[in-house]
Image 1 (cartoon, helix red, strand yellow):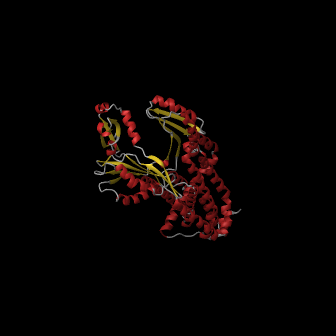
Image 2 (tube, rainbow, N blue to C red):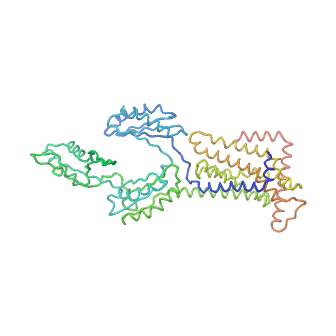
Image 3 (spheres, rainbow, N blue to C red):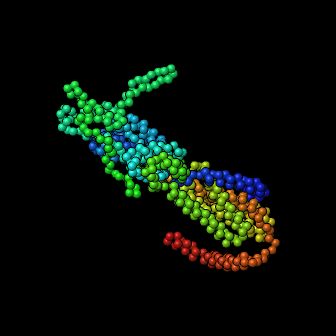
Length: 544
């Protein structure tokens, strides 16, 4: 197929095709999410099992080793490590990069169900934990209060955390560092001994009294109501009114042998902001959600939610990961923009024709737009890796167009009509341009097949550069010939250039002629001293 002739003969169709692609690309670009890095899923699954009251040695013998032996048969398992400490067993299963962790997690759950039969009865159910890039906090707020400090964590959980969880894209909202209410029972050992009671008896009685018991159900027509008797303590006074024994026919209450206090749990870590006590509010996104959109949505919602809080409660923004992402992406986008402008400037300096510069420069935005379409189709984001790929390719996408345009210009200067020059000039160097493009593709495409952590980062780079280079080849063989046939004019003689631009052209023309003559002299010398050139090239190659 004579691709240049096809597009030169149908300029309206060519313009419509490229305008359609540009429209789709602009829509894709506006819908692309922004993030700092690609969605990276660390190929590690942790299995955490609590064994209350057990020493590290008991945990290792009765829990860790039994679970390890069960998990050793998981597919694509690369390494398994374990840590046993008092009360807790932690087993880390490391898989090969690229492993489907959802499938691996299902295999682990099935094996854990079988291993449960061999675990001690007091051991808790093993918990699976996966770490991914979406678990990095989007926003961290500090919440301070004075009069409302007691019960601040419950207040923030109800007034802020619960409403924020319902926002689209918001995943987990955690409240950390707040005061924890604790009802403390301080038993008088003398009275305890006088009533012939023990600590274990008191603990058992309190546990039995602090229960909500189901008592059956009532059927009324088609409706079935479950009945239960609420028995959990609602205030410290109810704890003190618990009957712990009977002495001479009289009940002995807990308050008779102990002091019940409504206090706060002793804390090993204190959270302070701006000199005041408070809690930490952490907002994390759902997997695949846009970090910037989630941060903006939460920040717009918070002022309305803050009005429902007491006046002494204040919110302080500690960390906003979207701000860092936006700044990083903006800086890299500016680098891509300035890189493209410098490429256009260099083309203008060397070609010294504004029409030729426009024709070649159009290749850059077209290649970028097609790259955005590819990112949208594959579900990728605009991040540091993708923008780095664009910045690498932005200087290479004009190579094919420059070669074809220079050959077309040469034929026009030789007296050919623009249409014939566009078709013949493009076909003349078309095969060489295709070979040059394929050589670049051969360098970058293998990056898409790298394994390990390198493959996670360079996979998109290899594919994106390949897409842009192939797109630039298509533009060079279609758009460039068509525009050249319409914008260029047949030259019947040497055109005299006047004014300031004319003087600049004449000066640059002398410089380019001198450069061409110098290159011609170097080439003649190299052809006369072939052995010297070959030996010199070998020395430079070995030395490097």
